[in-house]
Image 1 (cartoon, rainbow, N blue to C red):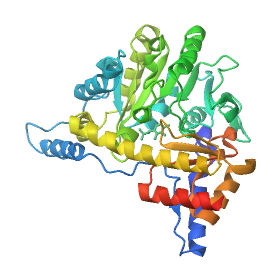
Image 2 (image 1 turned 135 degrees about the vertical axis):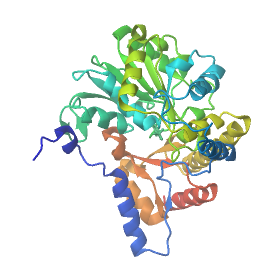
Image 3 (image 1 turned 180 degrees about the vertical axis):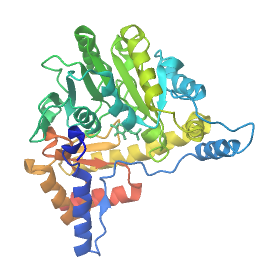
Image 4 (image 1 turned 120 degrees about the horizontal axis):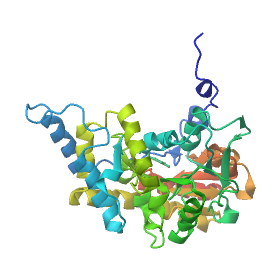
Length: 401
Ligand SMILES: *Cc1c(COP(=O)(O)O)cnc(C)c1O
C-alpha cells in the first residue's frame, strides 16, 4: 500500500445533497402521481445571454484560423478580462482595483478552496456557522483543521450565525490568521451593512489577519446600505482578498469563470506576488473562448440580460419570503440573495421539517444542519426554480403548515 494522503482519506463524507436526493427519489417511487418541486437547487437555471454564447462561438471559430489560433494563455487571465472586471465590477462602485490585482480562474470554488495555500501549516482560520463547506474542507485537506468531532473541526474557530445575533457573525474570540466571510450569505441569504462589515475589516487590520471575502452573490444586492465589495470598507486593501464569480451573476455555473482580487497593498505586495507564483505553478489559465464569453457579460446587452435574470430569481425569493411570512413562519434572507432561511416551526430539526414538507407539500428544501451545527432548526429554500413552480411550491407549503 502506498503512503496515502490521510487528510483526504479521513475526510467525512459530503452526504447532504446525496441524502436530499435519496429521500426525494424514495418519495417519488412510492408516490409517482405527486411530482416533487425542488427548492433545494443551488444552481442557476435561466439561459445565458445570447451575446455571451455568440462571443464564445466566435472565439472558438477564431481559434480555427491561422491568425486567430491561440495556445496557452496567461496563467493570471487575459488582460482584456482582467481589466474588464476592474472596469465593470469595481470602478462603478468607486473602489480602487487595478487590472493587475484581478486574477481570472475557472470559478470561485477553485479560488476559495485555494486561498488557504497562502497560509502556513500552523495557521488558524475562522469560518461562520452555517457555512459554504468549501472553506472548511479545503483547510481540512491541507491538514490544518484538527480532529473532526460531532460536526466540528477542533482547530477551526466557528462564528455562529443565529437569529439571536441577526445572523451576523461575532468577531473571533481568539487570534486567527484568516477569516472567511461570504455576504450576501449562502446559506442564510442574509447580507451585512457597510458598517457591520467595517467591524471585521477594523478587527483584521488591528490583528494583522487576512479576510477571505466571497462576493459570489454581490450582483443580487439592491439594499442601499449593503456593500457590493469589501473594498468599499476603509482599510480593506490592507487586509482583504475578494473572490467573485460569473456563476450566479451571469449563469456561468456550467461555463466556469471567476476571479480573485489580491491588492498590491497587502503586506507590501507579498500576497499579490504569492498568488501569482501559485498560479504559475499550478495553472495554465482558463480557456480563451470562456474568457471571451465572460467579457461579453459586460456588454450593454449582456448586462441587461443578466439584470433581468437576477430580477427573475429575486422575484421568486420575494414570493417565498412574503408568502411564508404571511403564513406565520419565521423567515430570513431572500432580500439581497437567492436564498431564504426558514426557521422550522416548533424548533424541530431541519430534517424533520424537510420530511414534513416532502410528504405533505411535495416540496424539497435543504436542511440547515447540512451547513453546520448552527444551521440546526432551519431549512434553506432557493429561488432558482421557475416562477410557476416557485409559486406552486409556496402555495403547497402554506397549505401544509
Ligand atoms: C455558488 C457559489 C460560488 C460560485 O462558485 P463557482 O465555482 O464560481 O461556480 C462561490 N461561493 C459560494 C458561497 C457559492 O454559493
